[in-house]
Amino acid sequence: MPAFTHHIFICCNRREPGHSRGCCDPDGGEALRDAFKTELKKRKLGPLVRANKAGCLDQCEQGPTVVIYPQAIWYGGVQLTDVPRIIDETIIAGRVLEDLLIPPERLNAET
Ligand code: FES
Image (cartoon, rainbow, N blue to C red):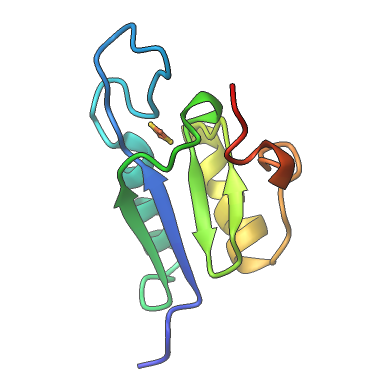
């Protein structure tokens, strides 16, 4: 079996309402992760691309947060409607979606 080409880590962290940092999955439904799995399956990418549930990726204020490795592409504010184009544009075509990209200077930035 060939090696994975991408691991997509989707923050599914949930915190109590009103937490100062917020969280990426307030209702704990893991809908974003499920959407990635569904879209990958539709495209038969499962053997090469994994969508993994992640705990807090420490970019909470910019969430919902997704990071794609080994390319180290960080996306923030990801919505369910973004999932198909992330797969088509970034995973398949190798293009970074600038409107979702968390630029390196904002990663781990103090808020
Ligand atoms: S809760 Fe998602 S990055 Fe922290």
